[in-house]
Length: 267
Image 1 (tube, rainbow, N blue to C red):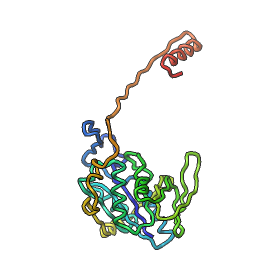
Image 2 (spheres, rainbow, N blue to C red):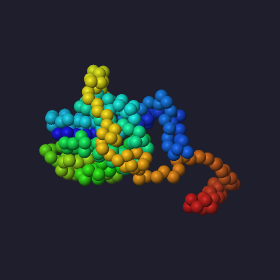
Image 3 (cartoon, rainbow, N blue to C red):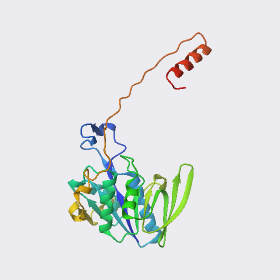
């Protein structure tokens, strides 16, 4: 069994808002130097799901796959310390400015290059953009089944059984391998590596691939391959206005309040 877990390094969601700013001209968020970067929490839970499968079935190789800058090595190392076997970093200036599609494209091409995979796990969404479509895109590009928002992932032979989270409950579905499963926070807390595991992670293999290594046309990756066009990115202005309604009795105040709400088209 070979499981590939796709992860993303993001700004720590617990960081203060002062840790980033919006560059309206470039239409992007700029993270301040020194702001902590972490594995997206949903991706850490996807890694935990892979480790639980290995705990259950035994013979299982887990590869961590990430597209990002050189700093993403630390995110991969965190997952290796949790217990994954090896890491692959997709790092190239051509990958910068990617949207969900061009990210999924690069990850799918890297998965093809890795080859011999049985299951691909991703977080249900990245905790910074919250789009939640990269995992689905990988499955579409590879032409394999996708099951989303999983709270439990079990493998039996060449079948994966997934308990999915719905708005009003849960459902259990099965599909043949290979497949993609996106993992939700309902899976539970990921395990935390100990010092010994952190030291062992530094000795595990990590491969770095560029666009040339993947054999992809740079026109299909990064900002040039993006399908999403951002028209405007800005911090909305928030204004508050308080209006007091006077009256000689509660009934009069209530009547005036109803009238004012109708004027504002609230009622």
